[in-house]
Each structure stands twice: as C-alpha cells, then as structure tokens.
Amino acid sequence: ACGSGAKKEDSPGTQAGQTTQEAGQKEASIILTYAEVNPADSLDGQVGSFFKEQVESLSNGSVTIDIQASGVLGAENDVLDNMTAGGGTVDMARISCFALTNYGGKLSALPSVPFTFDNREHYWKFAESEMGQKILDEPSGLGLGVKGLFFFNAEIKGIEDLKGKKIRVSSDPILTGVVDQLGASPTVISFNELYSSLQSGVVDGADQPTALYESNAFNEVAPYLIEDGHTMSASEVIITEDAWNKLSDGQKAAVSEAGKAAGQYCRELSSKIEEESKERLKEKGVTFIEVADKQPWKDACQSIISEYTAGYENEYKQIVNLK
Image 1: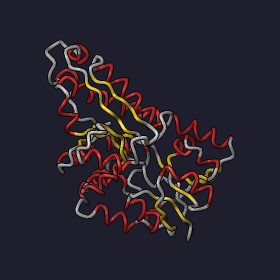
Image 2: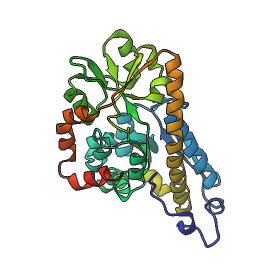
Image 3: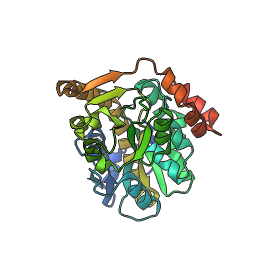
Image 4: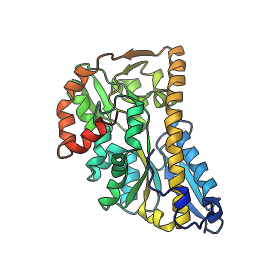
C-alpha cells in the first residue's frame, strides 16, 4: 500500500550502512495514541496491531503505538474533530477516506464512489499508484493538520434494492446517496447503536464488510448478506502533523516503512479473513445473496457517481483505468 516515507536505503536521518533500527537506538522515546473504532480482534484491529509491532521494531522501541480499539476514543467524526482541531488526545487513527469529505476533501471522495473498483487487485493497484499517494497527501495540503500514511481495505458487501427498507448509514454523504438511489431509506444511526437498532427494527439493514459483520455479531440480528460489491471500503491511517513533527527523521522513516509493511499485510490478510469468515457464517445459517449483474446497480447510482467526481473526472478516470 502507499506510504509517505523514503526507502530504507535512503531514509533521512540514517548514515550509509546504518539501518533504521540502529538509528532508532539514539532516539528519544515517543508514545503515539492510535484510535480504532472496531474491536482489536477485527481485521482492522489486527492490521493495526501488525503496524504497531512493525513501528516498534523498526524504531528499536523508540516509538510506541498505544492502540485504543472498540471506539473508546469516540466515533470516527469525534476522532477527526480532535485531530484536526489539535486536541492532542489522538495522534493517529484509521479513518474511512470518505470521512475527509466533511473537512473539504475532494480527491479523498474518489475511492468511495460506488462501483469504482472491479476487484481487490484493482483496489491495490490504486493504493500503490501516484494517484493513491495524492489522495493520502490531500488532507495535509488542505491544512487540516493531519497527513495520510497508508491505505486499508475490507471489501464491503450489502445493500439490496428494496423500496422502503431503512438502511443504516453514518454521516457519509456518498453512502447516503447510494442508499437513496437504490430505492431504500437512509437512516443515520451510530455504529454503537447498530446491533440494537437491527434487533428492534429501527433499521432493516446496513452495509458492513463480511469480517466486521461477523466480529460484531450482526449475523444474530441480520442473517442475510447481499454481495453487491458497491465499494471496497477504502480507509487510511492518518497521523497529526503535530505528532509527525515530534518524530526524528529516523523515526519518521520507521513509521513510513511500517506503513508499507502493514498495507501489504492488510492486502494478504483481508482476503484470507473474508473467506474464512464466510465459511463460518454459512455454518451459522447466514444466507449469502450474490448480485451477478451489477450494471443496473451502477446505473442507479450514476448521479451520485457524477456528483462526487465532478471537477475531478480525469483523476477518477485514472483510478478506474488502473486495471
């Protein structure tokens, strides 16, 4: 996946023949607080833990990542508000790319546009491309006080074209538009309230990656999973510029290298976890409904696709053509 650091052989702050670990021996110790809304044993939590291990190893222990999982530091927007306002409580977080649209991000919306990616391979070609790096760099360029480090991915399954059905959405305007244009009724519910809302009938469904659907036990209250592949759930790990600037050049190189390794780990792990999760869910009685012909779905979402690519048609075309 895309990272923001230099390669090991030309990492800033290291001398010829000196590894990042050796450089880290001379660094002052720094603790970075990392927010994750999902449980520690989820796919996102596991990739976060791998990133933590890599950072601490490559920095020779001079940088420690303190992961606060399960949303204990707040919902995604709470975390972003804190980071962009210089609150100091959160140094790093995994966020959905679309979340940055609420803070002026335009390029950041493109990976969340429905039916952009044909498959996982297409997504990871994007993540490793120059366009992927431009999207990681966008929040810093906008003066938001945060910078992107690397991409995550967990393929989302899930919204069927059922008139009048209430489908849970967050504050994501793209997903809200998708639900609306597919004929359903977008209903804003916080993630922490989703299980009880499904159980009580406040909402009829929601979109979730397969593995997170299982780890949050949503199969107990919503045993049907529609595989429409409307998005690849693009997300990224960001760090505040205040925290980044506290790091030495050697520590920055270690964090960047760890990000590249974590992106590759996510690429391998997400596919494996999803397949294993699907098998377990089938054994628990979950019914998987595959959408064989996605073109009608894409056609129904055309206006939302046009709206969020307006002015960035060339950039979006570059992403679509990375097949």
